[in-house]
Picture (tube, rainbow over the protein chains, first blue to last red):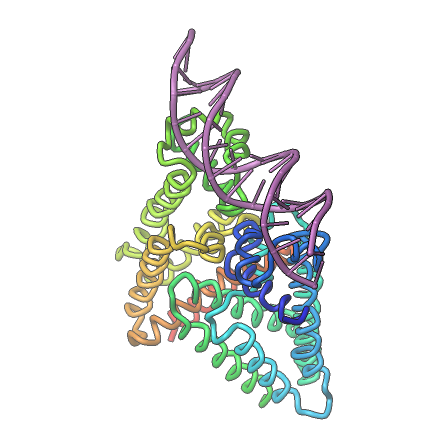
Length: 185
Length: 185
DNA sequence: GTCTATACTCAGATAGAC
DNA sequence: GTCTATCTGAGTATAGAC
């Protein structure tokens, strides 16, 4: 199993059970390596494992979201739509929670807080830039961008709380519709 | 300190640090009682403490939200507005997270899952009923009700993730505006 | 790089005096 | 009802062989 595959597994475990809720024994089982082997790959222990998952998500965001949004070859609406498609994928149609949300809500210490804050901000900012291209003024673009992330996050919370992935999928569709309407003004 | 005051403290600790992230020593410090004394009040241990917090929230929802929504003396919009005011209060203007969301996202076991699901469902249903009174058809009322909770939950996640309570407060205001528009059709 | 074995700390939980 | 003292297990982490 490659390092990247290991990190993907870490991501999946942490976002399902949270940081405190995930034990090294559990990780050891999922990955199929002894605890000692895990420490070979991640000398910093559990904290480094979670950081690796967050770093992986950062690069995922860059490659699968931010890059698309900045691609000025495609029209703004198409870029936003492409983003939503990748959002659907990464959250497995609402079946898998968001690591950022999970770690944020746990947030006893602010071990991961700074990084998550930056990442979320970059995402929001990138959407806002696209909305401005459509012709929305800066403040409104910021608000609408934040609102989109709010709805994604909220629907992921409820998808889990209500065992209802429809709600997530409907939210994504509504966002697409909303972006389309904005684009046609 | 009365039993109710203790439970309120439990609620606040659990929603700040999560279930797994909260230790009995920590609880002991916050409440000002030894661990043994805590077991006197909650023989079922930590799990019973969290259940007590959830039960308290259930009764809070009944008294401060559902009761208002059902009060047919007031016009529908006023009831929805009153709900939003209490939502602002209970989440301390976005400074305090939602215990339902925290426990849901942690959700290793489904110890609390069933109860949370029921509670959230009751809330959504109660809003939907009010929206139907306004004249919205059943399906749309359900969707719009879910959307309101989605936005509340999402803005609470981001309020924490971005250290930005403005976002929560703006969301509440937007919901009020939206309810008002619906009421005036 | 992977393992077994082990150290050490802190978690949740109990016993029993007052 | 509250405490001090203690138990037991699980948690993170390390040592050292292969």
